[in-house]
Image 1 (tube, rainbow over the protein chains, first blue to last red):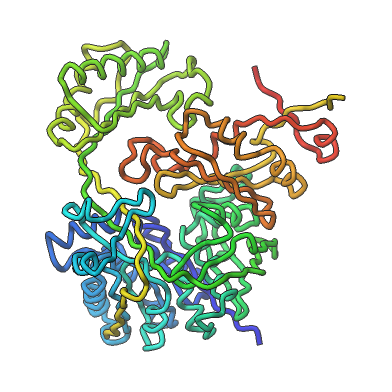
Image 2 (image 1 turned 90 degrees about the vertical axis):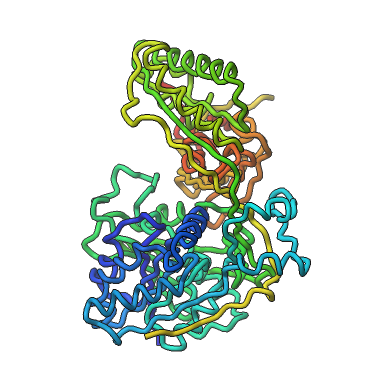
Length: 453
Length: 125
């Protein structure tokens, strides 16, 4: 018997298409819908929202997404796994229950809530117990920025989501689960993969990696033969059709745009890749050099042969802390000599900042249209019809950054000629929330699962 | 005896995608044809990629081979002005760093180019 479980991707980040979840549920048969809402920056934003209002702190788009797919959930039993809970999964679940009741489906949908990833309330206890939470990149101990920490979350794996599914949850809401766990959990639940079935678990991770960025594996942002990718306006989001041995096919619903091909899937496989021999997750270490991909008909790619090994004794922790202020402003200079004018504006502005005695940790100038993304490799940029002069500063002193934002507009009248593009007004000063990646002993992170209806 | 060589631009033999890991950018480079993967392995060394990027990055370059995908993965250390939210760059997350790599012109033996059907670099003046 070759049973297939279909997991569909409906959201690659908070801000992705509002219609994708419904299109995945209504466009053809699927068993699970996975929705990834969290990026590193998202957690600290949500933490700030929760500080202002204790019932906030989750991805609010998720409520609308569920409202849009309720008929499919209620009538066809499609299950949903989402890390939309952010820093407040319980509040997210209660908001969801209220929305389901408002839609007239009260009592018909059970919601599993996974908590325990939030280490902020335990941070001092952990530090006191000798968990230094050293910065993985710099080796510095967390105590050096402790007073500025905004949020601290462990990336948790698929196990608590599997528990929620086993307890009958139809929608599972988590906080900082790994993106790949959202795909892995339903596969473990359906196929009963053992906790040491490394090759199958690695296959689940690879399927998760292909799905976690939404349409980026089904023709979106695909460089290969990009002109010929059809109907991106109606792009179909990816679906993994997985079998018990871990073999799967990536495809998309019929009558959708985009393209699922060996190149489109391969580009997603190498996206954000580190050492391909060890893709480390809480569940398994997957070997991306084992992945075999082959065309399997139109808009179908077969993925197989994946191997993996035991997980490490650690979980990654993402800590967000306040790290000063920044602002970025820009002006546009036109032909003739657009780049030369923009470069002169840069020199003038920097001289004025110096005369004002303003000190910053970083000042970065770019000339968009000439060399902002390719630097010296882009050639001399002399013939550009227009160039955007873009300058940013970052520093600890808010007043200095604020003063910087007042120094750009004057250049329109008192700097080089042929300048425009200041309609947006003064740049805004933003607080910088920086990231502190650390590792923690797995055993000290305990997760909880609760099922509500 | 010196061997005759020709020039090939990466743009014509590979496609790429990149992303970030802190202050590192990754560049996944995938051969457009399986028979061109070997050329990438031989010619696209970590040292040459480091030289290509020059002052655009501040750190070293690591290379990993993925023969299963006909791909190489490069890690460019110090590519993102601090990375993440600290970076002031337009491309703070390294999304298009790999397109700068596609500009690279490599020199290959003429016989290799002929046997593998490599498209020759033809710079427009």
